[in-house]
Structure formats: C-alpha cells, structure tokens
Image (cartoon, rainbow, N blue to C red; front, side):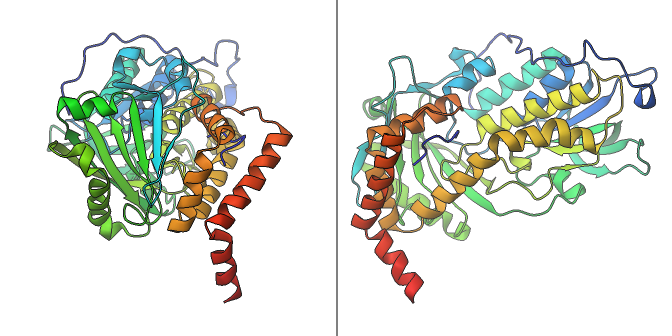
Length: 448
C-alpha cells in the first residue's frame, strides 16, 4: 500500500523557542551585478498559516527584511484533522504542550462497518500528534515575529506586477477594516490558501478543489474517554464518494468531518452520513463549531513566476488519499524561505525566477513529487467504490502494511522493506481485490 513511500478557543500561553532554520549566507561573496545598495532584500509573505509563518521565520532569520501579512483578526483556521507526524515536532521544534492528544490507536471502518485496528506496529514512544490549528498557527506566527518578521495586520486586496525586471511588486491591502495601504517589495511568497489571491495575480492556473466540512463536538466525559488516544477513519459511499470521514480527538472535544471533490454540493449529506455512523459514540454531544473550507487536490500548474513563489495550499501541496497538508505546508514554506536566503546571499542581492526554480522548486519536486503521484494513484484505486474500500480496509489489517505506512508517515523518509515482504504484499493486494470483486468489476467495465 504505502510501502516505501514518504508520505477558537482560549489559546494556551507559551514561550517561543527559536527554531533556527539553517542560514545560507555567511560564507558568500555578494555578486556585484545584482547587489542591493544600502538596504536588504524585502520579502512579503501573504498568509500566516504553517506555510507562511515557516517561510517568514526562515527569511527573517536569514537576513531578509520580511513582512508577514495576516488578516486582523486572523483568518479562521480551516477545518483540519490536526494530525502532524512525529518528525515535525523535532524538525520544527513544536513544544509538546501544544499537543491536545497523543494518538496511539487508529481504527478504520469499512463501508460494511468492519473495523480494523491500524496502529499495532507503533513503538512505545511513537504517536500521532493531534492539535488545533488555531493553536499551532498562533504559535508559528509568534515565532516568525520573534525571528524578526514584521507583522502586517491586514487583508491583501491586490498585487501589482513589476513594470521592469528589477522593479518592485506592490501589495495593496486594507488595515483596520477600511484603511487602504500599499507596500513595495522585491519578493512575494503566496501562502494564502486554496483560494490564493497571489496565485490569481500571477496567472498560476486553476486546480480542482475538494471541500472539507467539519463539526467540533463537545462530548460527555464518559464518551470523550473513548477517544482519549483513539482516532477513527470511515470509508463508504455514505460518508464520501472519493475520500474518507474522520473522528479525531482534540483537547476537550472531537472533530467529526468529511470531504469530497466529486460531489461538493452534497457535502452536508455526507456529513450527515458520518454523524449517523458514529451516533452511538457522540450522542449527547454539543456542536460547538462548524467549519468548511476548500482543499487543493493537486499542485498548481505554475508555482513560481518571476520573483513570486507559492507554498502550502496555495501551491496545492495536500496529498491525496491521506489528505495530509500541515507538514507539507510548513516544509514548503521553510524550503522556500531558505531558498530566497541562499539565492540572495543573506538578503544582499536581488534574485530572479531562475533562482527560485533552482533553490526551491527543483529540490521540492525531487523530494516529494513521487509521493504526491503515488498517493493520487492509491486514491483512484481504493476510493472509487465500496468494493474497493472494503479491499482497502482488509489490507490495512496487514501488519507489514501498517509498519511501512506508519514509518513513512511518522518520519517522512523511506521505510526499509524486504523483497520477500513486498512480494507477499503484492500477492495479498491482488487477492484482496479479487475477493472484494474489484478486479472483476474493473474488467467488466473495460470489456463493456
């Protein structure tokens, strides 16, 4: 399955540890032809989620004059399961007190409600961190400001493109609800989500979007105890025609949601479906928040143009099949920020499109493009019908599948396998699909 593939409530008070993204500029000699006289390179990051905050932190730490734009008040955190891999805690220096739940048990339910425990291979120290996006986003923004990024509270309304190769970009925004202002910068990083205004400004192209719908439900204590360290996933045509539904535990409530790209107008029907599937477990709970948001389905056709780069959801970095986006948002933001620092030699020289392609886009695609393509294939194979979903759940019971999947997910690196186990997995996959009549159904479609 995933073998050998990488795959608002009161906010807590916290100190801001320095993440210290690696600086690239200390040993460079500035190129005279592109040097900036009397100032530093100026960069604007549009959007203060994980992607934007990580980019702004890297830029500011690396010596670039950085402006981080975020709505005031901050935009509502999108509906999100809130799961992050174990490696992200260390890589991005996320304090453990931000974590709501340490999930050590995963349970996946088939269309016929067959349940498979999907966490038997986790080691004693391993878990999936569950947190609230409003908590994580606030923390990452605060850390970017501590690194030196200037906070700009305002809604970006437009982006004027340069009239000459070295001319600035002009960002137009409203502050305090009505005051119109503008800011000239050298570089723009668009981290403003699936409906990115920055992407539209540079003609980055359209992409298919799913819609995610989620209710946060506060449960009675005895029912919340069931989800103390348990997350649940449900598949079936009643909860989504092309994705999964979830029940993920938070600090004092659960997040119950679903998503779809093929039938967005029916999203409330599918939300009703997941509520019905889990009703015995959530009955008596109170809905405290309802959220909906578009989720990109694939990377945009254009992610770099001129001195503008897109990261996170704006670039389309959400994986199919699993729907994972937080890690890839933060990672792409940091990689892009570091790329600008490196190419500008610590903010001392102007950069151009070729610098962004070489230092950001090429390394990103080399590391993650195959992961996105593979998970796209998995979604097409296993989420297309209830027969396919039954086969998926059966496969999830295989301990080898679980080990390879969790090692790849938790650590975002190649999980070591064996040729013999890989061969067995292939045979088991074919057998499962035959038993679930997936092969027969697809052959009939081909013949007809």
